[in-house]
Image (cartoon, rainbow, N blue to C red; front, side, top):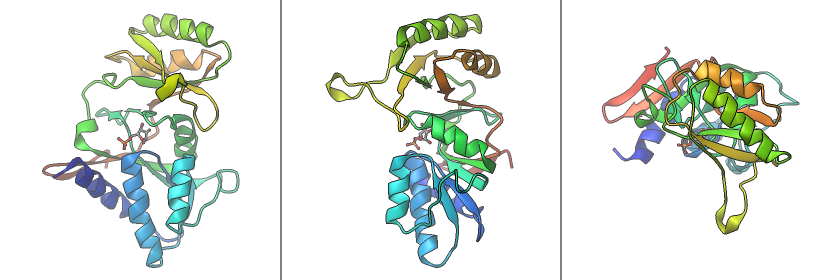
Length: 231
Ligand code: ABF
């Protein structure tokens, strides 16, 4: 089965949790996009849901599919959010933000009664951190902020390169909120809760890509079928 087919399988299983009348948060990334496609097909056959997107890219995809969209200000409580992840461990702790949408993703997921993570099974790891942890930071005072991240992360056992995410042509990647992304190549995150707490103490860090205590269920598609974690 191709990786694309695995993403579709996870997305289609997650769709079985969507009920008529639900308010649904729509994630970002290639796996979440499969869910939005599948939801769009259901909507075309009469399913009525109201959705909030976690990025401009997802908003535009959903609108093209005719999905009824709202904003989090108009609809501040959602029944369910379905989103992808870059890594997840057995305790449903996630690294997100590879697509740069972690801030809106975390706001939307936290405003939801339930969050379902969809992924191909290769995203499941024993220890988080091989995927560089993304942090959304304000551009002002970048060097000072980066120095503080280096010091506080080392205090909780995380050391490694911290790189500003760049686009081609020497321009920095900017998030939908106009901030920068720092990718922290820690390699191993032994104590995700401690790192999360430490990062929250740094004023220039708007949000970090650790999602702890937010996801309720992971739908993982592998060669031998779909498995559920947290069910
Ligand atoms: C979003 O998309 C992100 O939080 C995560 O970074 C990424 C996963 O992308 P993909 O599904 O394309 O692997 O869910």
